[in-house]
Image (cartoon, rainbow, N blue to C red; front, top):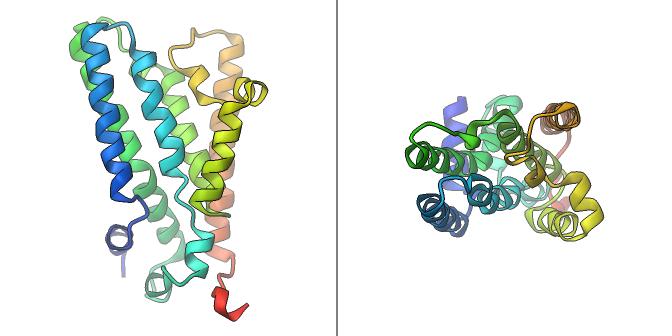
Length: 209
């Protein structure tokens, strides 16, 4: 069994429901219309895609595994680290593809003069938020993690401290570089911890508890 088998498994037993794929399509379409009417509005156009990515990347692993959804994969002989990487990749790919689509529209709309979608701060916002959202959700469920993100984003004090949206199109400065560094460090550490949990953690079925 291989990494590609794990990828296929997470499409057959989907970690990203079709409803979320439709939501990304709508978000990208709305973002494209926004950019075509105002090429300088990349941050506004990317905001709904980034918000949606927080919810979609939070696909959850622990509870789904304990309910037996991944039994066939976990007992297939596929290395656990490959299962973890495949689960993460499938979870975050729709949002990253949507981001690239918006970036392509911005490139066309601005004629290549201004590409906010690929600015270092924007890359840190999308990649960092994707990995952090997935890593946090590994220990819980999509519903619980979505509620967490809704609380974080709706309370002004926490939103100012933790919202990745603040990085979109932010001017580069010493304070911004610190935020980018902290975001990247949190993403790497969170990803490593989550992968370690999947590799070494036990996943007893709920019925056996």
